[in-house]
Image (cartoon, rainbow, N blue to C red; front, side, top):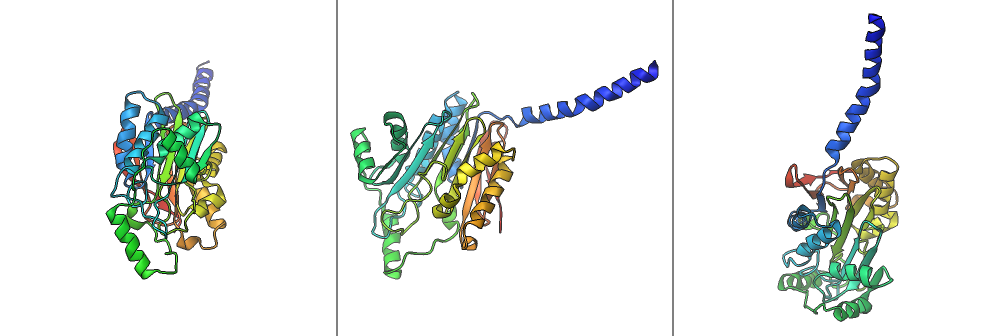
Length: 322
């Protein structure tokens, strides 16, 4: 009888212990709220988003407030006010936003408006459309109270004049990780466990007038699925579009991959679809419903900002393909 009881105890340990370990691990990874954003300028954006989330606010409000900090920073040469212009000297902006219900809005080729992310949110909330572009987007913004503003700062104009003098007939080849910034994508999960994301940029410097990258395209620059997770992209938009990158990251998480592995596999897809991939930078960041985080890029040098209650606001260096 003693031997039977001993065998039963051993059997109980074998059956129960693995379940307990998994349950504890899941509980530890379920960090709420959580904010993750691309590049070092994400630190300031995270701070603003965290204020919303720590007060119990909605992730959608947090991501909008967060990226507006970067849009309104005149020292940032790749987002909003102060962004480098196209080859004709025009600062044109792209942005999108997506909430936990799947609702989304975006603007592309928008000029003269400092915070395109807020216009994108109004497209989501006030129209039956997902995207407005160019003059139509500007008219919509003005009709909703946004003021026109000259976005070409003295610094950006000086950079443009220098480029024109050295490249009168050519579009400059994109440098990798210039000044550690390129777009800002910010994804968050709130205390209720709901996800949202935002992505905004002034796009590639010296681009052809009218060029639009991945940042305003739902599924390319940003994607949110409240059952699974959220992802956002940075880097050369054309390469991200070809792979439908952010949607791919989320779908890979749906298949069971961690956010980190999903970002790695998505980069591999970008590489497979880009013959010139060694000259490109593309990076992804992702979070899943459990609060796990991932980030990966083609080239070294990509980093992202993470803010949670356990460790505060800090930078994380991403692993890379090269």
